[in-house]
Length: 433
Image (cartoon, rainbow, N blue to C red; front, side):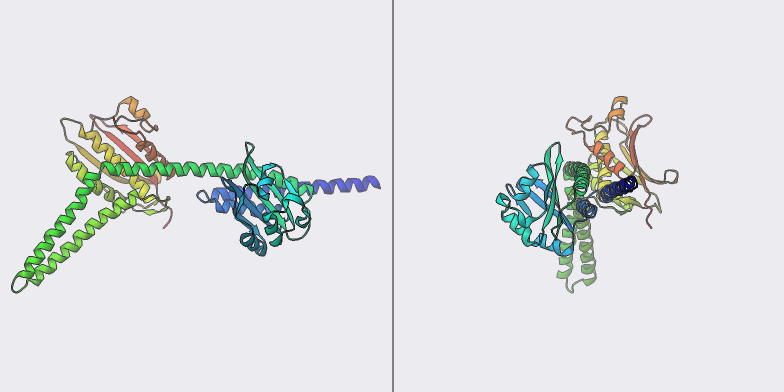
């Protein structure tokens, strides 16, 4: 009889343990899904961690604090709406050095407080008073550690005095350890992407600096034309009687000239502005024409003839317009600079766009008639810090390849027969209507 009861208890305990493990893995899966779904935003990941933790340990709410120089900053609270509102309104967002959460995190061990009102001694600080006033009675704190360094702390709370079980504490500790790995991996990936964006922005600004004289010429042209038309309008007004038709035509020209100047300034502003990546449907024909216009004066100054072969009814691609324009600007400026040093022969820059149904995308080509590429440079062309220019940084083409690959495409270069080089990249066609 006793053996039967013992067997039933053992089977029930095993079933409970299996259920707990499934719940734990489900919780981690939800965090990983949030990471995959929110590559550029950490808040949904914080929320997913707390949602999973509160459900895993049957708590009323959960809070996440991350470590910073001044202490532990509250970044997310989830669970019972009333308790959440109390936490945000009553408990300090920054738990400063020496406060209760800071001391609990410093222990690097889980801390279980079965009844906050029974806490005595040094723990009864201002933070403790705020917690009690918020209506929290039982709490469990687990520090988040990476290489024994404090990353943050997760706390679970209950409105009633209801201590957490040993199994719940163990489950939460294991969950927190796995959540820390996922969270830190995401934070490092985000820091890497931010560094890449900053580097790409610096590259855009440097490229625009190289084109400053050409850009000034592009802006100056419509301004000079507007002044000429304004002077003409004044002369027509001075006639007796005033030639209203000519005045109207001159004013129309002034409006058009102002629009031209404004378009140039807007293109420069969008390329120089530091902004997060934006996914949108891009008309590559129009985007490339804008960049070509910015580099037109630079090409004329160096005796380069630019020709474009656009594709009618080109499929739209989805991506970041500014980043794709940065790639084109880099390739065009590189081609112009490559041809500036050649002595004889035509200096021609050919820009082409084609739909490539076999590859499911669009292909863009930039071909020059410069000195071409040596076997060594061809193999190392896209390596960071590799450059053939005396004053080059060696980052432009590396950044371009990163941008294109982030868009699901590829960028490559080939040496042309006789002379010159051809740079090409592909971008997948947008599947959106």
